[in-house]
Image (cartoon, rainbow, N blue to C red; front, side, top):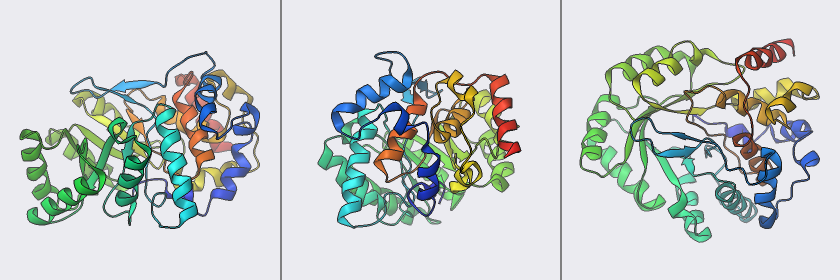
Length: 321
């Protein structure tokens, strides 16, 4: 794993309770024709585009709100596939491009590839996936299978949780050099991996690194985020909701009034805007199969972000709950 799988799982009832000032107040509709209007309302300025940040090595711009798929995009039920189709369409219409997945997420790659083709949005997606094999030949097979399922190009190939690290790193560097992969990187989802991540970020010429970071677990601010900025490495953040524990902590709590100062209308946006307010973060990838949650999440990519004083206040609020 490595994403907020709880977005689509057992914490959905908690999430609905704390949407509060989000969808209900903004008056959002899930009808496709209302998506652009919803984005404008959340951003606070008519016609505002989603915030984008550059990939340091190339200055290619990416929208800061991405979409994860662990748990969320797995399954085969017709009703879930209908919901995922709406999630995919809404994600792109609201300005998202970065979609992160892995062969280890059940049939998520197959579902993503099929839905991207059916909805006609494949060419608008920045497709990121992972390799998690210990041997070179198995890695090549896995990468080929991902490309077949997701469609080409694979924009970003990441080594999943250090599995087969040195073997797969040599393979990814070769494939990048040959133009078969656009970007390469590493991922992990646990704070306990930060020491090794730091060493790998110092020694490897990676384009991206992915790790966990949130208002509840801000340890990445100490060394990893400054190091990424210094080294020119793009950062993808997973577990922004701490696998749903964030929503458990804020359940039945009113959204602080000061959240309006950074265009925040829900607890989900509170968590996501905290992450995005760190300048070294390139993209955050909450996973969801719920179109309403997707709409709520995406609004974090619009409008103002908290400054450092506000970030301290946000941490204090969470510590007091």
